[in-house]
Image 1 (spheres, helix red, strand yellow):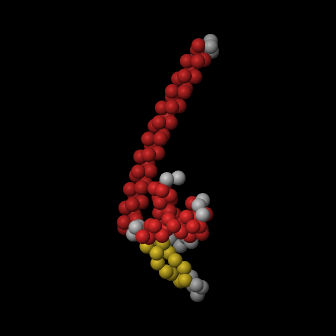
Image 2: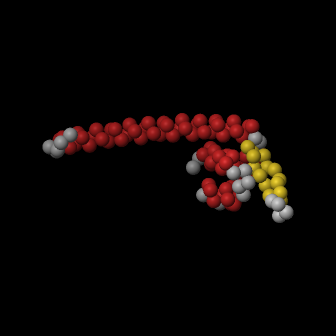
Image 3: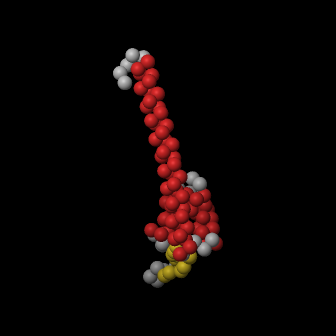
Amino acid sequence: MSPGEIQLQVLRAIESNPELTQRQLACVLGVSLGKAHYCVKALVGKGLVKMGNFSHSQKKLGYAYLLTPKGIKSKAALTAHFLQRKMAEYEELRQEIESAAKDSRVKKSQLGGGA
């Protein structure tokens, strides 16, 4: 997974669940807790995510992660880039499949099989 994809996944996860803990985020992303912490800290440092305190009833303080306006713009740009890259990969794969199918039909006809 590229750094941009990880960043996009973190932004999506935070947007969908601001009260997500770093441990839960690590589980969602399939990465270590340290990597999740590093990613969140980097996004906070870039100004894409804001970290705020909130109270869990009368329990200890927790944190909520919120996307900043800059974070929302970044998420949109990362999503657009991700879609462009995936569409290019799809087109390349589609052409490869068509070529393989064409080769398969040629080989069958050369062997006396049906086309």
